[in-house]
Amino acid sequence: MAKRDYYKVLDVPKSATEAEIKKAYRRLAMKYHPDRNPNDSEAEERFKEAKEACEVLSDPQKRAAYDQFGHAGVEAAGRAGARGGFAAGDAFGDIFGDVFGDIFGTARRGRSQVFRGADLRYELELDLNQAVFGHTVELELTKLDECEVCHGSGAAKGASPVTCETCGGAGQVRVSQGFFQLQQTCPRCRGAGTIIRNPCDACLGQGRVRRGKKLAVKVPPGVDTGDRIRLAGEGEAGRNGGPPGDLYVEVHVRDHPIFERDGEHLTCEVPISFGTATLGGTLEVPTLDGEVTIKIPPETQSGRVFRLRDKGVKPVRGGARGDLFCRVVVETPVSLSAEQRELIRKLEESLYAGGHAHRHAPRQKGFLEGVKRFFSGGKA
Image 1 (tube, rainbow, N blue to C red):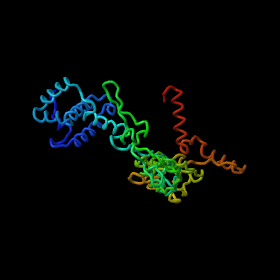
Image 2 (image 1 turned 180 degrees about the vertical axis):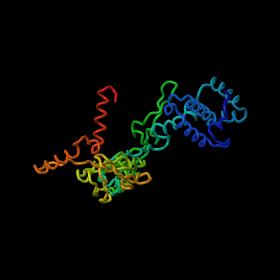
Image 3 (image 1 turned 60 degrees about the vertical axis):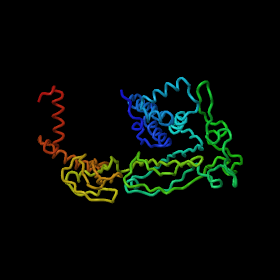
Image 4 (image 1 turned 30 degrees about the vertical axis):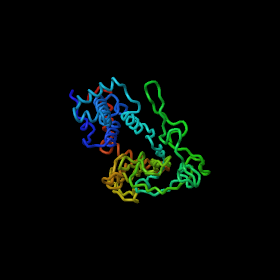
């Protein structure tokens, strides 16, 4: 396969500076590195291609040969280099270390290492009404915050961190092993690049202290269990001037004694009397907005569902408000007197005497016929 133009590989102009070339390589290396793209042969090839392009264009001699003779000039320079050996600490070695410092969080050369603060999680319990209509709640949490005395530097008042003499402020030191040079975290400053000779008394040189904080959180209408609210910058403070983390508020909606939620819809069971179910009438039904009256038609069967439009939940991510589904349950009379029992017995006789039961209990008739078909092997 013919090699592509190195400038096109890195997407830089021929007038690009060494810093621009290294920056372009870092971007491609982080995107196509094999550790980030396992089992992706195409990404691996793109990574190797970008690595080769950077190795050539970041070396003044190789770049001059490439600009004049193309890939042939680079190959000739490579053969000459193989005869003369490799110089330790060349330009490619530097940029390679910089790239993997970005990917894996190690310090860049000549710059103190900074760390982003940790993200925090807070579990928030809400009532159904609070979740449906929104609510403002005050949270109390304890977290690592920037020291107010040293403002995160870790040094006492009037003092400041000094450059680590061991690593020269790089946060890393080079260790030779045979023909190779490896970079390791500096054992003295532990990667910070600076050391604190006169630590702050308030934070003992850590730059952060643990303190309580109150936050007012506005919960948007329509949230449900499992939703998260992100509060940017309200996590723990970073180290060495790093940015703070975020706070994630995880919502859990408590069970409601009447309603059950299914997305944007609500459901509930409403008991009705035997007389109302038989003769019809009106019924007061609870909703989150207050009670409404629904009409119960005569001969309503237990389990019938009545739909109340726009009495559900308006989704937090937009859309129409859901509905409320009321399932009526006919309640059997209890604690009857002798006279009441006798009246029901007479009503039962009048309804089912003379073989006319199917007229008053159609569902019972259908059920009994189904049972007969089942035991007769499906024959009518």
